[in-house]
Length: 388
Image 1 (cartoon, rainbow, N blue to C red):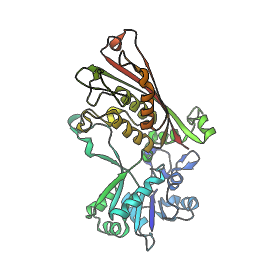
Image 2 (image 1 turned 180 degrees about the vertical axis):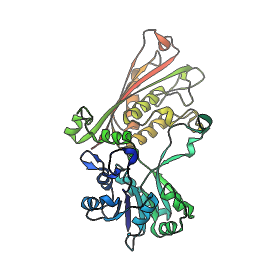
Image 3 (image 1 turned 45 degrees about the horizontal axis):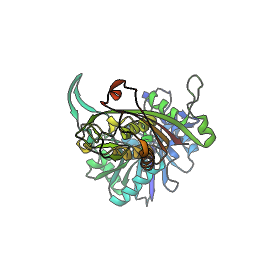
Image 4 (image 1 turned 180 degrees about the horizontal axis):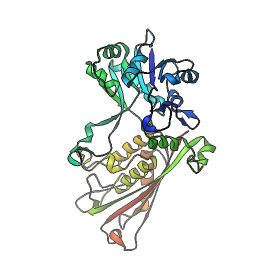
């Protein structure tokens, strides 16, 4: 048996909406309503709400046990734990501010608690460069490969979480920290980009864009194509990559090996075609770029083939809730000539991407570095869509 405690007691001061954050409207539904949509039907549902919004919370979720929150988030979770039914073996704690967390994250956390017997948190990799500073002075760059962004729901064995809360003598920023402070072991599962936390007006606008709320001038951000097809959020992205020729390297392009051709220089295998497609897909989904995901400072990707980056990029994009409609990529170079290998490249890339990929080629009529035979350029476009 599982219980899900949804913490919705925050004041939302930084959001500046004039009411508790969980009750701010997005597309005709409060953030709390959006958050409840992914909670498993079979779970006991506990809502921790402000004293002023207890009746509204009960009206939104008649099956839920609704309790008033405390002065801190930790006190609010403790209030929720106090009404968890006997017999519940696993407890998930979820923030209503992460209103668009998909159901599969709940499922992953529940399964991991059952298999590990410990605490479980959903996480995403850190893609930005992280610096340690002292005031305005930058002291050092932090190795981000060992860092993650923590999300909710966080799951725990019920008895161990109860004991950790009883033993707590300090305030913690999340339940996993409190659980670990009491000696509990915490592991992680994959989070989801849709589970971003809504704290500021910019965060709220991001959520509105994702569900297609009209902007201040009445222009809808949703796609009319999506409205007709049951899909929303059609997005396009562009990716460009260039690499210089290097006669000492083998040529890998479009994920294929080209014997008897001059290769391309680069930290990896220099596959400009695969790299451009990665950038196009990440750009379309709003997930950064290939440099932020697979930096040249990371030794794990030294010499890696284009398929490695492409496979990981597809996983990141689809994991964020997008399906890939199609990709188009053009090679600008004197050599190699695509010729009879065009269909082979298209078939290979289509298989890796999981969607149609078309490939074209041109020269630059002797202009620029490509025309002078110094290297190649690839330009890719991608169309992705999010399920409504």
